[in-house]
Image (cartoon, rainbow, N blue to C red):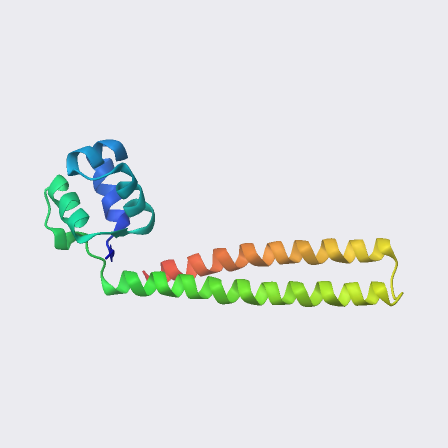
Length: 142
């Protein structure tokens, strides 16, 4: 069963020691893939956490995530999920409306194309804003 550890701390300690991911894997006696997963996702087995702590010369508990860091990660993920879901629902609604108006003869193909492009651009900007805003708000909570 995987546990969550502080991936940022693992990266920081590895870089302070001037080790590559491959070197850390060899020193800790774990696979390179495990090191990559730990640094990307923060997930590893209890034995891997102990091996990493031993390689860095620290206690295994020093690699644990604190509850505030977990709350920040959960908040960031939830905010993005709901934001993107809302943007997708808006995109589907807008495209449906444009398509229905086009099918009923309410607008020309050129006008529909312009509207589709405009809605697509607004959707892209919305997704970028959602990602930026959730990161900014999460950093404020850290």
